[in-house]
Length: 185
Image 1 (cartoon, rainbow, N blue to C red):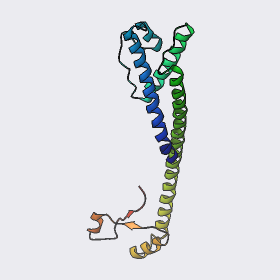
Image 2: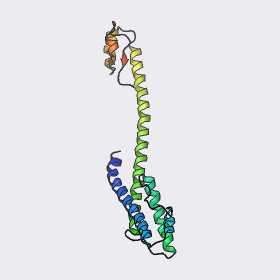
Image 3: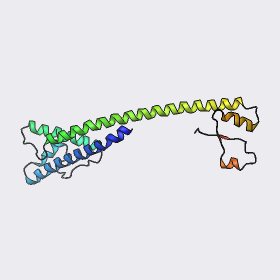
Image 4: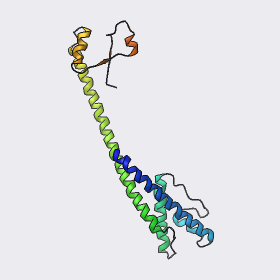
């Protein structure tokens, strides 16, 4: 989890950078259409509506991934048809940032999966350990069950059993009645 958190800083920088390049690429396409350098149906190569002049939402990582792929694929289709490239930024520059982001994205996903597996394993072990502690607690109590209350507590404490009284138990007339187990729960 520490590694994941540490690497997330660089990941967020990469995400911000690729988001900026995607946004700028779409803005350049829209400006070229406004100037008459490109026709409006150029947007359809990139999965954009022909009349949509706004940059689509790039708020989520999935949107960034999808739009980056659509722009790269769309520009490749345009270029294979002999159309002039979009410049400033070029698709090559956008692709470099996109590929680097995807590298970090996949690495972060891998770290997240590893962290989740480790947490699941820890939770499973915790359940097992709690069960063993409960079993030991019960066995120690059963062993000294015939002794007077104070002596039973003293003997049980040699095994690490610590009785914790709740407020309502402290106020009761018999302090040694129905203590609650500490440390489990």
